[in-house]
Image 1 (tube, rainbow, N blue to C red):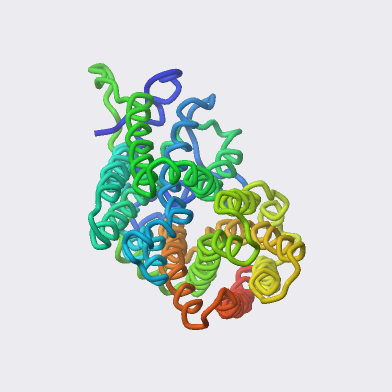
Image 2 (image 1 turned 120 degrees about the horizontal axis):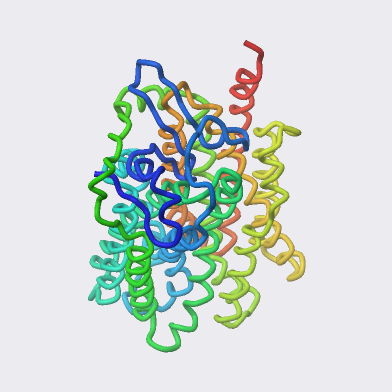
Length: 461
């Protein structure tokens, strides 16, 4: 039943083999081992307020080879999100897509996560994290190939839905395996590195797509992403292959998992978790929408060549990954977290004026553009640092963070098509300013609501 990591340093990981199958794992790999809900309710959380507490066992040394492969699997999954951004003009021209339909093409990969993210996470815990990660990569390869051969819009959109399922399986299974091959002293570094997979993957897609567009069109982009996922699945299967079970050692039975329904009921009634889910949805809607329209704005408004626009868009998007001070502030308690979120939302709005308003000088627009993505890195760091604290009780941490990530999927799903609809209705890129204004104002309101929740949690018992 239990799966075990083998390969270099395999003996160091056998003690954690049962944790590869049945830890309750959230989107960032924060791991809990739960007792039956309603009994002792003991929660062992890998990270709370940036410190490792209550987790015993695990390897004495980190297997960086397997860790790199698992991180790479998440990056390959993120490539699927970024690959349509640069290819949209070519796809729209061939399939005659409207701007709104093109927005759905970008966001549809998040549909499955928006609808059933929490339930998929629970299924991954039961199916096994290694099997889920490999199945996710295989689905990405199959659906990417189907999209490359699609004769029309319907098949292409359906393949994007399948890619969304593969993305969820990969990014929910990989961090649990990554936890099992990382020593205790490296867990903080592991969380920081793994949390960069999304901007890194989308950036690689934005940079690589123009080269493939010149040598085969958008279908070559889809085919290359399919081959990348298939190749990585093979490498990961070899690196983490499961050896024959030892006849002299039996694996311990997996720890029981709490029933999902009562846990989910408590999480849905938590005002703090729901506020975080709304905030994260608004953030991801703005982030992906801005990333999607950025090459078009650079090309149409500032007269960049298509490949120059793609490279500049990738550079400013990648700047979010390199901006560590905002992430450090999020994990410290020098400022209230609700205030950090509200300040970041206000900066989003101000930068939106600088980038999308008419008549802004080129230099000021580029400065606002870079600042938009730099400050954006603070919001997910704040959300994930505070989510375990706002969980409504023992045994609900993983489900709480899963619900927050489901909010992120909703934002990724609806953000691009809604932004495209606003831009179309207003007849120009200034429509993005309206979209960002509404989303930023809603984020500030949600942050002010979070203030009351944070105050109640900070009161002494």
